[in-house]
Image (cartoon, rainbow, N blue to C red; front, top):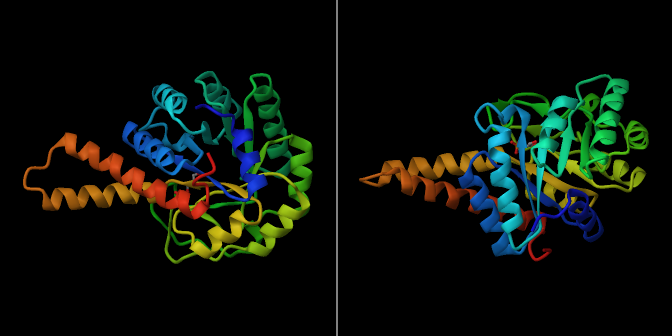
Length: 286
Ligand code: 13P
């Protein structure tokens, strides 16, 4: 069933677990994610980032996401990940997304506040919820490349006082923070700054979001979900899971064919999503 973003995150916030937000680039991804959620009785967020539009066009994907969410026997929300402009957020709302992220983290603080506020105002009139970001989540590209950046550099972390100001000025529903997390493949397991997370959580009693979930240690995941992180984004891990499963299939099956490849993609998506839902303790929460 289609459930609003804010409702999913409010429950996660109250019961101290995180809803997995999985970037789904194909119908196989969507089917695997829904199967995982139904089997584990877990809420789910299906999302697509603007950088992924060239190979998974938003207007083509939206009806698949929405229909799959409506038909699911567990709560599902469809979310725009990393919208790069006001116009992209408006486009996603028009396509039926129930929540959008405007990512102005690379902008000066005032500019981030200005555009985020405009997005919130527009989204409110359609009953759509908004996530925004403050601080710099390192980037090697969602699902691409390897991170060589320094994830522990404190000057990119979300500032505690700025986070409170940002939330008050914009009226957002969830805040994505930077605590040493990176998008893409880590060269070494990151060590998240849980102290900073605790400070941000204490200062702002609202749902926080962790981007760059793939490759995070079990220990850090647990510390995150018990200290205010209510949504964790995962993209790269699914892509690796699918690639590895297809590689094994191609190498071992004497007569590989496309239909079986589709089944393998659904299976791999389901496995990766289930693994993360268990880590996020969202199983049994639907
Ligand atoms: P990963 O690809 O590192 O899992 O990051 C996903 C993400 O944060 C999407 O916004």
